[in-house]
Image (cartoon, rainbow, N blue to C red):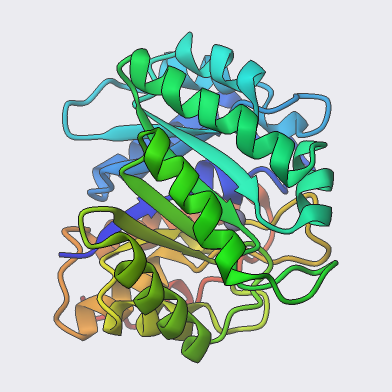
Length: 296
Ligand code: ZN
């Protein structure tokens, strides 16, 4: 079974300059749940002056339904973000650090070492509060400012997060620099280093058109958990020209056609994709929703 974590409400929307209303964000999440999505990155607890689109995180969390089968996660870059997160009903705290120095300075205004020390404390505190921490490492497959990124550094940070209590690690290709061979190598090395009891989730952006190819490479290397964004929404305010995440309905279509089940309703996802395209008011990158005859 493929586990898809929908990141459209956070990674997808955060790069939109026009503020999407809280009501529309809540409706998007409700529509995704109707399509069968069980894991949703719903909000981000970052400085609202820096990412105004996420300023209503608390209101969104207050307005979405509590559902025993649905797990909501929120992005946290610092101790301050954790305090906000713990005041909501968030289930999972996605603790985010970009492995490349320059990217992390722009994204979190901290050196990698400063972030790592602060976030290890955040992970411990998340556990004490009875919520689940997930360690998200950005720019794992390359950095737009520094180029290649040391995989030893990636694994050393992952190790510190795992030792602090993370049972789930997300390797993110923040600006779409990964290629399928690299994904295969990194994935296999990760499983060798940390074993299969640590859930590995991959997060690809489609900046250079390799999002689905990278997803397939990771799947063939044994990964079952992926992030994706409805309609291919997304980008990153700190990643020049980054485009959206791999599109949810395109990913689901690929897996279903390979007879790999996702437990998701592709037709409902496509309807949701059309709906959000209307809200955003311009064509979005997803492909399968544009095909005039979709057999599901
Ligand atoms: Zn992303």
